[in-house]
Amino acid sequence: MGYTRLKAFEESGYVILDSYDQAADPKEWLDVEYVNWKSSGVTRFAPLASAFGEMECNGFWNHTPPRTDKDGVWVQANVEKAPILQRRAAEPGANVGRCRIIELQPNEYGDALYNMHQDDNNRLNPDGTGWIVRGFFNLTDNPDSVMILREDRFDPSTEIRIPLPAGAQMILDTQRFWHAVWHQGTEPRYCLITSWESGPELDAYIAKYHGMPHIENYPVSKETAEKAEAHFLGRVEARAAALAAAGKVDEGVKDPEA
Ligand SMILES: [Fe+2]
Image (cartoon, rainbow, N blue to C red; front, side, top):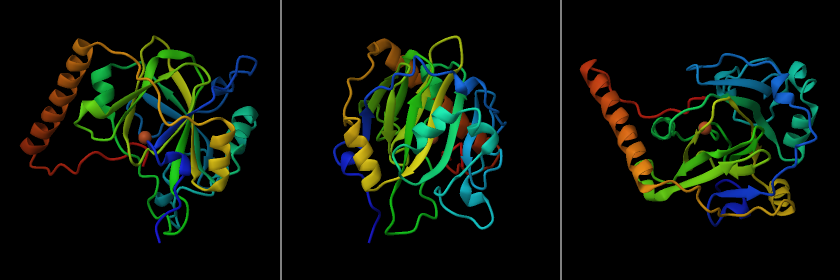
């Protein structure tokens, strides 16, 4: 039977929505509680919806009983501090799974490429229901930071670089695309990430906010791109060598949130 997919994703697998004017909104992302979840020191998460409404970020499939990334329960202590963000996440009317604010420290292009992964959003998702995709609402103003998407992890010609000024809104098939954020700056970047179920509600929301299936890539020089790619490939090689030296099998790149 297969999954219900978004009509809006037929062309490219992502859409950029109208930008949201949040100039008058309070900075709710500074008031919520962040938890240390598989933290490398570079990212932290503040859950707005979790598997059972607890202040935690574990994948829903790691709970008992295990289930897919749907029917998230609002985390009261955090949504009380972030009612506008909760309202924005709920606005499409599509089923909400995980919903969290990510805090990301500045990083380098080549390290962001190394961080690319595919999300495990549809684990245990029953056939015949909607494919889980994710919304990204950029909260801080990071016009020189980009969401990197690649169809093929090792093919830079497939790279899409979406700039992240305040209010930037996009919906991405993060299980299809290799993705990570390259955050240039000196302060952390904050973004609201919501798992939504594909279906008519989400298609209507995308139409309402004029979802565009393409964007002009944030420009980088050939030299910058080549340097980053070399750094990325060097890290991949170093990891493979370290695993081989330890007699371990490389199990590939896992979803860091899973
Ligand atoms: Fe991801």
